[in-house]
Image (cartoon, rainbow, N blue to C red; front, side, top):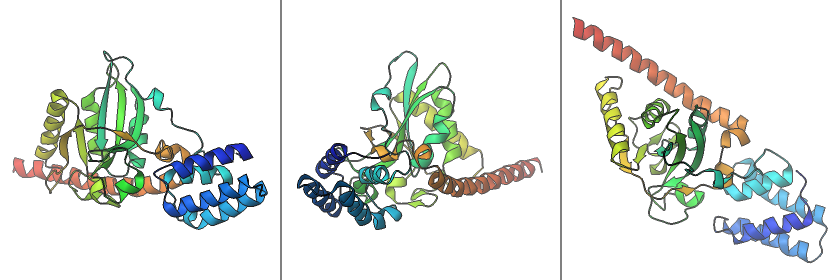
Length: 279
């Protein structure tokens, strides 16, 4: 995607005002905006800004919205496609419902749910904390008490809440309260957020069945909590698996390998328990 002068100035202005932009990023963006407004050569100034941002971009260490901008000016990825928040809503309360799950990095929690029949929309975001409008930097720095999570809107005629809970167990390590897989920290702790008593009953019954199954030799520590405000994450994080397929596959592969090994252990443990009971 080739950005034009007016479009670039508008993007720079919005990023400068964006509270999620880091101070050093803002200083670079402000310098570029001022130079363009003073008549500097567009291509030269954009190339300079790209070079200034490149070292952190290569380390995946730019804030999400600045990453979106960097992808635009370098014509990489599809991060310029905005997530349509207007479509993430319950339009038919009779046949639609929502569910919220936290299970490590939300990048790997979207695809498994989104590709199931009956799923209308999956939104990555932050919940369970004490601050309004949290940013990725604030959550990853553990300053707000939020966890990374996904909010799922689904058609109850096709898929039930209980089905989503069962899928959730397959995607997470319910014995790890300090994070999930390579993602460490309180912002990655596993939580099932319930919106009413019915969801709580379903989730608690499912958790108890898992604990009674003997699949794990450690306690099931995934907590079940009532849902609070769900704050959408920055556009960069939405449907990450589509925007950054190579990076997503690397992360997802490591996660899947751990789960495959854990599930194999659980299967063996269950079979041994059955044999022990028979004898």
